[in-house]
Length: 185
Image (cartoon, rainbow, N blue to C red; front, side):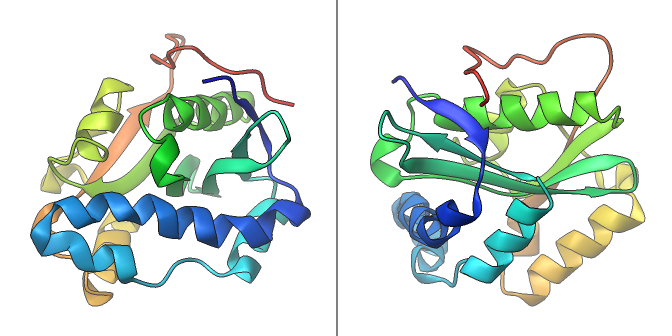
């Protein structure tokens, strides 16, 4: 699929909650997690905060319509990915991989030491996907206070703690496996 990755603009924000909702349809295939498909998504205002911080990217089609997004925050010398979502019918085409590559490139440009995230264990489109991109699953004794707080907060929001994990991509001179990286404009 030909898609371009670019920084999100304020006029993209209204489309992003619908992308997140569509992306969540993948959870319907896991009976104990199917409720996530009907769960709340980030508000337009929350997306605008990421956009204004310059930490939101979109994958767009040839008409410049968003097909997926990634939003992140810089915390304690790390780029933390809060959300990666791709329209359900566009998943598996490399858009998520390209969005991750853009975020990692940004982290490198900012001389950040790592990229972190929390996700579901053992799901092909979660932990296994990120492992293919070079992220490592962190053991409980390797979690810093920030990631422990994030996982604890997720548990209070109803996400099953036993199914969650934190992951890290340590940035160094080696380039991560970004696949066919798309240009960022």
